Image (cartoon, rainbow, N blue to C red; front, side):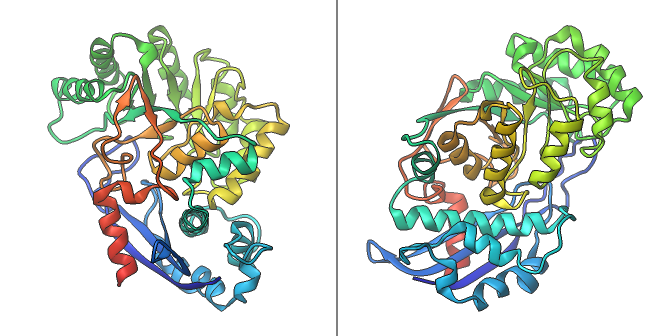
Length: 389
């Protein structure tokens, strides 16, 4: 078997929303189709992938380096030992040939997009949902049939007042979520506390509200917020400072005894390891948000999980960023603690399979071969057109 083509395109996901650091008015995402010569049910198998929100499309890197390396490789070097399917580790190694270590900012996203599409194709060729394939390969079991999810929103938006924020959160509750997340750090501390109190009033308890500063704070501001947030008993306090400022994160732990979360902007196993070594994260209460779609894909994420095990961290403390179906499959297949969800924003990429209800902040896994993009109509329309072109 072999890959016959890899198609990619940049797709706009622009929006007027903003967090404490950036707005999304010019945001794009990469979409990839990995076309194989394998047929199932009379149709060629095509694997699809895309990158998570918050990082722009990576067309140049894929077009100039990573796609040509795959397409010029001997197809046998990319296949498994039986020669009847792709080997994601071998494809990954091909992409990363002649790449120096370090520098995990943008190429990790390009590789992650292609890696996602490869895994989608692998699971489709085996005729299994990806989460079941992962559970069988790496856990010796069938996987979790349902996954904890929380609704991420609460962005700053022109003209959005407290009532609008409450209406948004009420909508998430009506959709079946019990835990919600909102942005902080884009206004004054006093205004943010009013926003938090408005949301707590709707969801009923601070333990069901997570807050996210998107790396905006210096140490003094992070500590000031920590002291103000402590009485609410929040679900977590996320990414207070720069994601690579491990000293800030470690010091913050001395001032905030509630759960904290970070990691979505760490794009390699090595950076994740430095967080565990030097960031003061507490394995019994804190959360890790590494996102495979931004960090070299599932091949690298498996290395990250192995590193966490060596440092006595449970995979159940991982709730990936991104709100996409790839991380949902990883959570169910590898036994993570849950997954982010975007019910309203970053469409068509946000959200999960159509007609799959959220019940008590859990979503059941669809029985669809691969990642399951075909069960999300508006997203699959974008992907299908890419492969057809």
